[in-house]
Image (tube, rainbow, N blue to C red; front, side, top):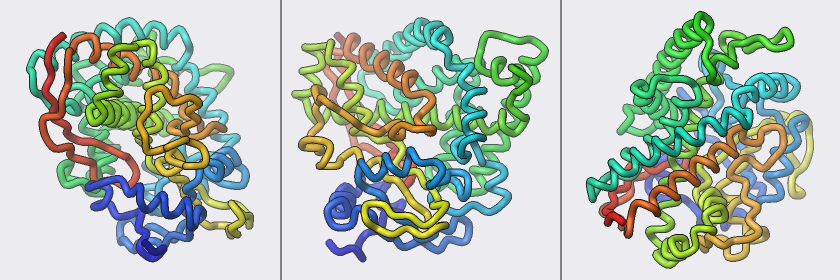
Length: 405
């Protein structure tokens, strides 16, 4: 392999496989690599520095003064002004604006809210998993992995459970905007965001008239003379729907696939259920649902000995850092007993550490505990279909056969 062979933007490649060979080559030969951009009329990708090592990623992620999310956004492509206005979320902000937004939305993630959610979500998970496994053969992604986070998001936001498939459709059109199965296009993504904004604004108006004990009511309630503005409210609902749905869905799918491909690890987890917590951490490392986030250098600097100019795009590849040989012993071994496990599936700390990290862990624990309790065996029953995306490490379909416990 040569450096000129590297192309981490190729969505067709990502639909086929994860380019771990390219990342391993970069970590060894050019851990801070000047990656050529890609000319695209709708979504132009500028040249960027690919950050592939664990330590360098943490350095970039935690320094919000030097490496900005707000200047050009967190995705690979440079958005036009209309798209930037429509889709700019709290992910695309820096302190102090980010600090203010995070303080306001944190009100919806109190321990009491999560505790209240846990019991009901456990009951919903039991019902859904029981219904799926009694079929014998089913698509694990669409019937279980996608359904459960949708129920969680609906529960948290106060969305009627019968409307959860609207969230599923909108999320797929946004994240799968390059995947033909989801009629992928930039226009479809914009239309999906618009429909989502209309829906949540209507729900917000209902909560203003009739407050309830849910996140939406808390988001629209003024505290200390401050509250989310109308577009801030819209974009937070968007990012919570997409991030809370896509990431947990794909971590669940990748986690089960890893266990299916390694029957010894599946049996170990069945024999020693006390390993579930460490298994979840290994699933998160292994899955790395979010492939990358971008930052922009605010002044001349250097990373790993490489000079970076003010205005350069710097892209952190979490999926590579979570296989860094300098941090993880035998990183391509899936090991549910791995300890320590300093994965950065939730961002790597700092101001942008994932707001829903503990909630995601809870969801994964409940799902896998229920799967193990209701089945004697699970086997793969067909080919896995991957999402065509260089941003989300997604699995769209995974047929399985189960034998009931």
